[in-house]
Image 1 (tube, rainbow, N blue to C red):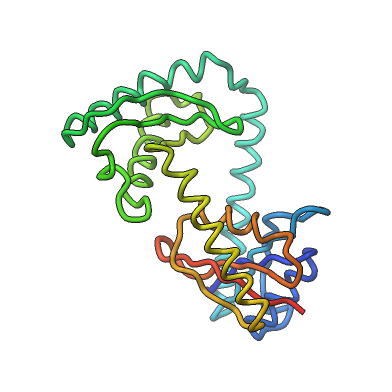
Image 2 (cartoon, rainbow, N blue to C red):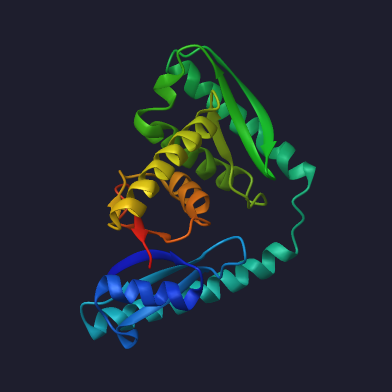
Length: 237
């Protein structure tokens, strides 16, 4: 099975673009709509192709099961109010884990809680915290994954994702990748040829999808498998 993520002005145009890129017909693919788009944002779809009929059948079976699970979860979440009480419950859990990790890594830093765009973010600030970030944030992503695993185990009623940031790294990194993307988009417009960027995490790819979504004749899609998934900037006639 192969899948690519494609963006365009509409869902139909994104599907058509994806079929052209893959060299397949509509009956050969399955489509997952990620974003239907609007006046200000491009539509985003994920397109799947299959090596055998059995592979496609297995995908459809698994996808149906996931939809049923998601429906049940959504019904459950509608009954849960994400109150201040829930946030207060996770705070000592996350703080204790992060402070313990910092102590084991011999890093002197403080942990504080904040909110950004409705998301709960625990910020780590101090000296010599680069070891907690790693190359392109790889260590930070691992720490965030472990944090969320612990939160789900100890505070199961809290269903949202917890974000970890170190010395405002995520915001700085977002600004950097957006600048790189805008520079590469200009090159794509000049050459009318696609450019593949270096592997990035989902946070960075989404930031680029968004910042380039309103540039005429520019589209984006993702290729590859995590952690080597890359974003490709395309020229659209």
